[in-house]
Length: 86
Image 1 (tube, rainbow, N blue to C red):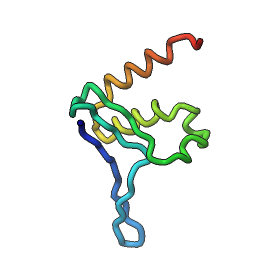
Image 2: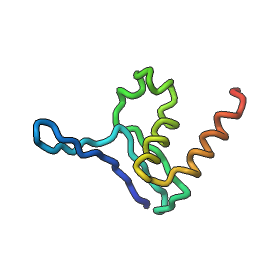
Image 3: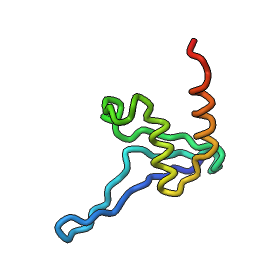
Image 4: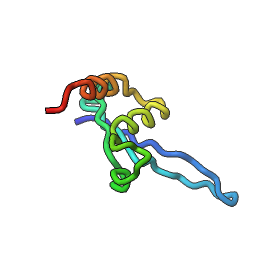
């Protein structure tokens, strides 16, 4: 159980408002801000060089821009990146 956050933007084109979903979302296990799991919504992100091969870090930054709690997940991701690869 948990909470699924689906961020989106409202943009106007030619005087018409459009609801545009983001390329990622977040699942909060047990509705806890301390347990954020970023989810990929668009598979094409995996092939986009702008993401530098690490869509999770970019997703956490984007989710934070929407005011969603990501601090614990961001720390966990940074910690993971510091570990030597095996």
